[in-house]
Length: 397
Image (cartoon, rainbow, N blue to C red; front, side, top):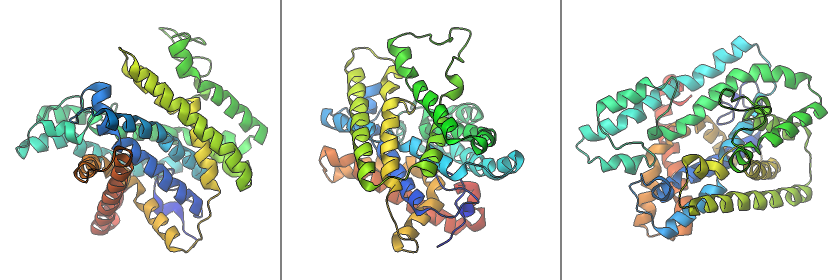
């Protein structure tokens, strides 16, 4: 089955133009989505413990499993970014042409869905619902205000800031930044040798230590200070390293299953241990800042890099026959992927409530909720795409 990725829209989360379909990329995308939805399905379980702003009581067992699944799911965003590197490097087109095709496919749905999310609290008030529903729908919301003025204030800030009513929209700002940078980065990638790429990745790997260095050694390091935020490793830090890492593994790593598992399983276990134990330690402190709470869950840290590499290496080895029913479903997920990302947060509490109603044991609640969210989001997006036809790209990318 030769399928052009143009139909898929956004790379990483969906696909990339001018690439023949790689079925393992579709499988990687499914894994990334499951981890992402586990990450967000865990929000109601530990939001109360972290910030005391959730509509859920902080049941100790649920909070514990929320932190366990939350730690396990950290590779979700890096996997999407690595797929962007696989599918978009090199860009193979002019900067202007790349921007014209990619950025509107992201920005237009982002604007529409941001407005919908930010006006949802006001709409619940119009329907006569109690203000507590705001925290039930959006665990991290800064306020339970149902006023139109508050909603419009968030709408007006969309060009430069997101509200935690739609906390997942942070990713789109980052993604647009990657797209702006991609043609420039691609020009170097096309000319760079394997060794030069390895040097970049080594310096990037060192940069992933900076969050811990800043927290435990020195707040100001490698030239940063009150009047300078751009230190020695700044130009190699961030998500561009994940893009190059995805490109590098896809281009140069050809390992057997045995070698893959010998490398990947220790990386996964070690990365998870650091992530979970570090997060648990921070949460045990009597006083902690939001920055400290997120420290061991930060995407560009060594422990998350370890888990991400492990999953990427494993799924790269998975074989799904082209033309099979499984590959067809994976292709359909890819086509609906960006829309699923946009809409899924509306179903977070449905998954939570259904798990509670079924009295599922705590270890199962989050993966069950994630599957409910995925199923509901996928069906909703498929329906919207069918109803809106060619105009669906404005809503779903």
